[in-house]
Image (cartoon, rainbow, N blue to C red):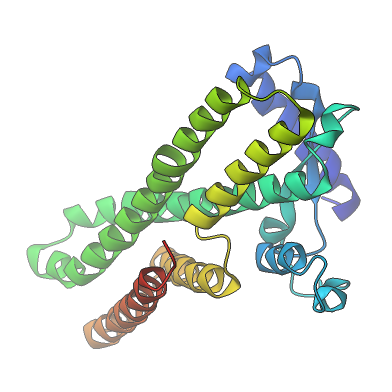
Length: 257
């Protein structure tokens, strides 16, 4: 498929997804559109955090030579006046950050689930051969558990309660400035609690998910040569995963309350 056809194809898929979901009853669903951004999530975070600072000039251009479609994919939203007072460019960019992060996590979860499906085929192997795969099964489940709990935490324990709190607080607002403050606080809390307020934290999370992606690719394209080589590869993945996970937990423990 020609690269120029991809945006149109993505728009068609988005429209299909909207019309076959509960969003079909939303009168504003047609305002949602696909956006292919010329920078990844980490660059977007730096771009937002640098606004009105001396570092703002550093985030004017980005090298797109290594940018994948997955890293570029985001949603855009067409906002009319006067709603644009609240859903301004900076607010929409922060919504994009939340979506891009959740979307990538869901992508990694699908990769790990595909590995689980592939691993089910090994149960028909002889007992001695089946035992060889045990370490990889444990590592796969550890990765899958991490990504599922991370997604659950962000959606159920962060975003949903924050949204309920925002809706409740808006009924008490009397001016547009009050709405802006409450909405800004909502986005700040979501970004902070979803680990999207620190480039160092996000880089560590992205590295951790990257290891899961590499492990998934390794298991899906496995060409079994020797037990020793396989065990060494799994041990290497396990060491990398644990090392980055402990680094992430250490960084989280140092976050201000």
